[in-house]
Image (tube, rainbow, N blue to C red; front, side, top):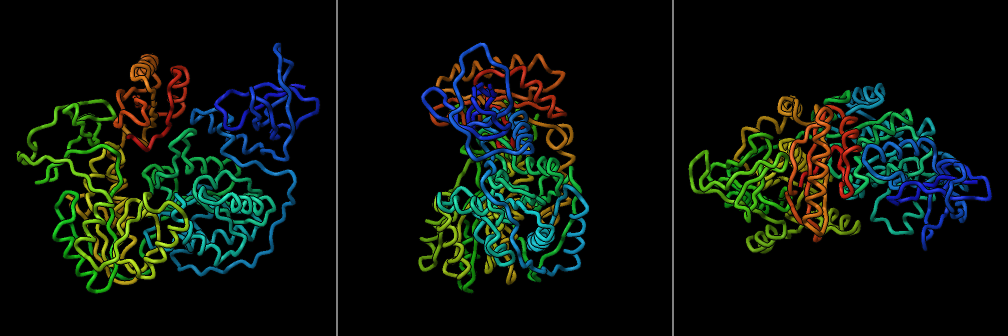
Length: 612
C-alpha cells in the first residue's frame, strides 16, 4: 500500500512511501530520507506511483487529530510554509495514555460587582476582549472562568506573551488550582518537559499556561483559550512559520467551538475594532499616580537625578525604562523635539549616515539629511541612543551606596535568574531596576513610587505604522507597575506632552482617534504582507526582489505594491536583505497575488508587526 507522508519540520512537499501494513491517517511514522530517518504524518492513501519508493520504517505510538490537521493546513496556507513545518508546531497525541480528569476542589473566587458583570459578558461571546486597566483585576476574572470550565470537566489554555511572566502567574494559578496546573515554555529542562507532557497525556493537567508554544500541546476536552496581554508582539513568531499565536487562538476557538478571551489594558486597535469588548475601569488600590513631563532627548538629566535621590532618601524603589528599538537611528531636534516623517506614509524615517539620507522603509522615499531643524531652524539635529548598561553605570557612579540592577534579555538569561531578581526587588534588596520592554510585562512589583520613562520620542518616531500605539501602550504598561502600595510619580521624557497627556489615562479615546489615521492605509482596515529576500550575494537578493516585484505589478487588481528596496537593517548574519511591502483590502487577495508571483528566495511575512 502507498501513502502520502508530510515530513515533520521539513520544507519539502509531502512524499510517497509504501507500507506492507494498513496505516491510519494522521498517524506519526518513521521514514527514511536519503541517509536520515525522519518523522512524518500519514496524510492519505495513494495510488502506486510510476517511480521507486522507500518503505515506512515503523509506526510510532502518536497521532494528530482532524482538528489539529485543519489548523496546520490553515497555518501552512496563510503563513506560506510547508505542511510539515506547520504540523511540527504541534505536539501529537499519545495512543498509550489513559485519559482521566482529576478530582479537584475548585476555588470560589469572589469578584467585585464590576468584575462579575465583566465575567458574565465574556461568557455570552465566543470571542471577546477584556479591556481592563492595569490593576483592575483581569486575573481574578480569568481564574473565575477557569473554575467554571474545570467544573464542566474541560481544560484551559492560558497564553502569556513570554516566559518572563510565568513565575508570578504560576504561583497565583497553583494557589487556586494546585498541581493540575502545568507551565510550558522553552526554558524547561528536558526532564521538566517530559514530566509536564506526562501530566498532559494522562489528563492530570487541567490548566496549561505559557507563551505561544503552549497553544500547540495535545489537550483533550479543551473548553477555553485565554490570551493575556494580547497586544504583545512576542505572540508573533519571527521565523517561519511566521504565525501570530493570538490569531491562531481565535481560529482554534472557531474550529473547537469554544470561547476565546483576549485581555489587555492596551489592546491592539485591530482587536478593539473586530471583537466585542468589555471595558473594565479603575484599579484595586486607592493610590494616586502623577505624570510629570520633561522636554528632553533620551538622557539622565539633573531633574531625574534629583527625583531618584529623593526616592532613595525615603527608602523607596524606582524603575527606569528604556524603549527597545531597532539597530538604526532616528534624527531629532534637541531643541524642539521635531522628528522626520515620510510625507507619504505617516511613519518616521530612519537615518542612514553612509548615504547621508533619511529613508522611509515603507515606500522607499528618501531625502538628504537636513542641516537645520525645519521647525525651529536651529542647528540642533542629533541622533542619540542610550543602552541599559550605560544607564546602570551612570547611576552607580552617582549613587554609590544604592543597589542598581539591569533587567533585560542580556542579563535575564534563565528562569532562575528571573525569579531571583524579582524576589530581591520585591524584598526591597534592590533600589533601582533599569530595563527595557521586559519591565512592562505585567510583573507585580509592590513598592515602586517612581517610574522614569526615557526617550519616549524614539518610539513615537519609529518607522512603523503602529508607532503611536506602541509608545502609548508601553508608557501605560510601565506606569501600571508603579503606585500599587503608595502614591507614585511617573516621569516621561518627551517633547510631545500634548499627545501622551491626552491619552495616558484614556486609552479608549486614543483607539478612537487612531482609527482616523489608519483608515484606508493600515490594519485593521487594510491587510499588509512583507516579502523578505536575503542572500550572501547582494545581487542575487536584489534580483529576486526585482523579479517578484515585476510579477506582483501584473496583479494590481489584487494588491498594491507600497514600496520595495533595501531593508532598514540591510545586512544580518552576513546576508544582504531586501523587501517588498504589499497592501490589500483582503487577505485572500494578498495570498492569491503572492502565490502566483513568488520566487525562490522570497520569505513571506503575513500581517507583519516588525519592520526593521
